[in-house]
View 1 (spheres, rainbow, N blue to C red):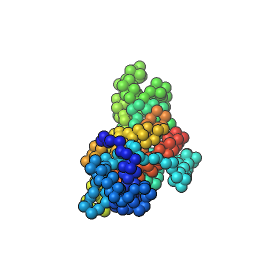
View 2: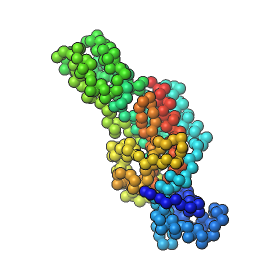
View 3: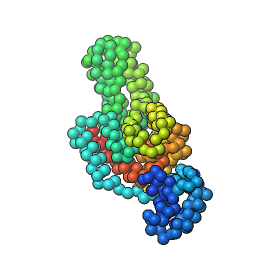
Length: 357
């Protein structure tokens, strides 16, 4: 969505309209701007500036007698060239630090508990729908596994990846095995596979264990089950969502059909996860030290039901793995606040996940 370089007056008026609309959800008129902002401009001059902005598609007039509201194009220009990203305020910082600090110092949280807690805190602070995606694992480094016999015909396999317990699978056995045999197989697998990525293991496990395979061995069962054991976790199982109760209270969702469409969308967890995972609208000017924040506004989103929403996301890192942290809400969003909270939480999440387990 290309934009010409607006002059100072136009930037000031567009910024005020967006900031006022975010707070009030009501169209903003020239008289309101003239009375409440010391721009040194008359009401008539402000009206002319607003008319120019409307002609170029940055704002629109929902009704003939009403003020103006921002368009997707207006939000995009604001995000890229006007918005200032502030630091997280002290109260929010304390809430985030307390939540992650408790999980970290007590070391009671599994990675899934940490991610769910992060989604809840982010939803509460942003008052939007929060989405956390755990890291994709294909390029993650396998650390170790353990096997636990549940019965004579069932066994649980626990995979640890870079100190995060990320996968637990129950396997049905078609042969009788002893605990001693299980222990020996675990030693062999950890010795030969540790340090490889899951993708490398899937491709090369037969070769790496070829001298151990017999027709009736537990090793052979592991090789045959490699696609299941060392495969990528489905994206919907990597998704943590919170905050729907906040977003449906916003003015944009006063109409029942709007709420229904939104609930239908978030119930499709696969689509929500993909929206955040594929969010690629980078804003290169909004934060020089964090070029990895993505903001997708309105019709920039690939899913039709998200055409009235904004998605703000940023990655977090655990070792060599990358997850995503995101906020979904109406395009009438406090973008600067969303970016600052996401940046801070991404750093906290990376640090906490590196410590738990």
